[in-house]
Amino acid sequence: MKIGVLSDTHLTKPTGIVETVKHTIRNKRTLDDLRMIVQQHFHDVELIIHAGDFVEMAVFELLQEFAPVEAVRGNMDRSDIQQTFPTKKVIERQGFRIGVTHGDGAPQKILERVRQYFPEPVDAIVFGHSHQPVNEMRDGILFFNPGSPTDRIFAPYNSIGLLELTDRITGHLIRL
Image (cartoon, rainbow, N blue to C red; front, side, top):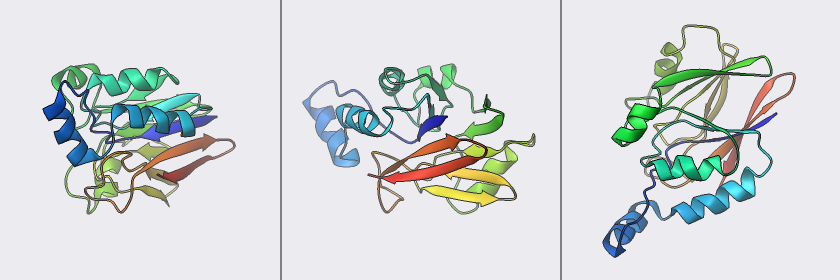
């Protein structure tokens, strides 16, 4: 099974020229750009995981056009998203348990903090928040942050990710 993973899209639907200019200055990418990224890299996934900071429901709706979406809310999400999605969840697929949360606080020690969200056994923890890509095994758990496809504020490059479930769970970061 192949799962597309993204986080920290930080996108809104522009409602006018002023919002479009503000959006472009910060993110350099739009909903249309995200659609092209998803078409190219997630065309054959069976599931998409979004680890929060959609900002607006339009991103969730776009992703649903490609595959079923499992998601959590982030600290920058608007109230409709805050009310729709949980802070954390555990997804079970093909015998694997994948914990999903957005994360919080400074980038330092974020792996330790997101681990605390899942005292139950999990095979992987998908998170976001820092915008910094992570694909690291620690104590038998895959810690996976896909980075951000739209915002490089704390990261050297934009990225998304894939999880592959075979006899084990494997993460792949895709540099955009």
